[in-house]
Image (cartoon, rainbow, N blue to C red; front, side):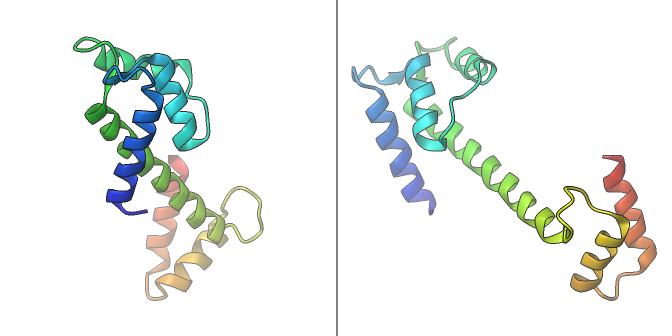
Length: 129
């Protein structure tokens, strides 16, 4: 989905959730908007964080703030999805973790000239977290 169509969707959801046409989303409006866009009810901590950051200035989340928040949330969601897809491609045995052999096999297929020492160092680095 391109940025313009995402923005238009976010605006539509904002307008739908701002039923009273207040110009902002209340706490409850914001929760409904997140459900509509991402399919889950945000946690109390997530909502508290958003509301605390905006309520010093306003009664709720204004459209521009909402657009920034949702764009950031979508980018994080896409990044997480990409990481999961890459991990799944490397986890050929569907164990939920990668062994050093899985790691070597993956790197040998995408960078066959990479020295094994570098692959082992990378594995140890990732393993340490």
